[in-house]
Image 1 (tube, rainbow, N blue to C red):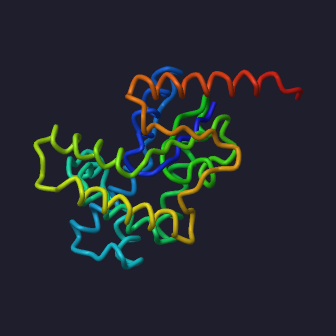
Image 2 (cartoon, one colour):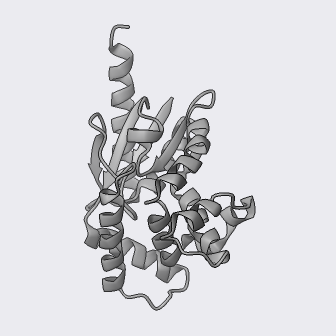
Amino acid sequence: MIIAVDGPTASGKGTIAKALAAHYGLPHLDTGLLYRAVGRQVALQGGDPDKADDALAACDFPDAVLSDPELRTEHTGGLASRVSIHPEVRRALYDRQRSFAMQPGGAVLDGRDIGTVIAPEADVKLFVTATVEARAERRFREMEDRGGGGTTLADIAANLRRRDERDSGRKDAPLAIASDAYVIDTTGLDRAEAISAVIEIVDSALKARAAKPR
């Protein structure tokens, strides 16, 4: 069983994907972490994330980068959004994501183009969203829990809007809702409510799929 979880930054898709993986006993891949690793590697190499050649060279990042705490910062998130614009980078990371999705038994993947590009044949596709204001507040609280960083709520909201525009407007594999995806808005939901709602959706989708004549 393959579950695709897409959505913008700080919508709650990562939390939901991890919960689904634990609930159904499936491996989980945060594909955004791969792009953050590329962005981080570009910075470490002194490159320009807006240059395709620099971003492509960073795709050969060492595995140690995946555990770098800098990957979770707003700055690296911005770099990830910038390197993901390049078709060369998306092609370089496609096989890694595709192989993870197609492993025996299936998997849960979260990102921005899982249901549309990486695993369009996924058994269940989800698109998790929330207002910019709600997402900014969540990210602001996360940063405060990690010790803060001097970034204001307004700055975070502005950054999210810029990233949404880049992710949705890029020509190659843009952030988009698959035609057969279930959309869940987490704006007014807490963590437990969102997870419960999504599990109910997935269970219903699987039952409906199983009931279809083959």
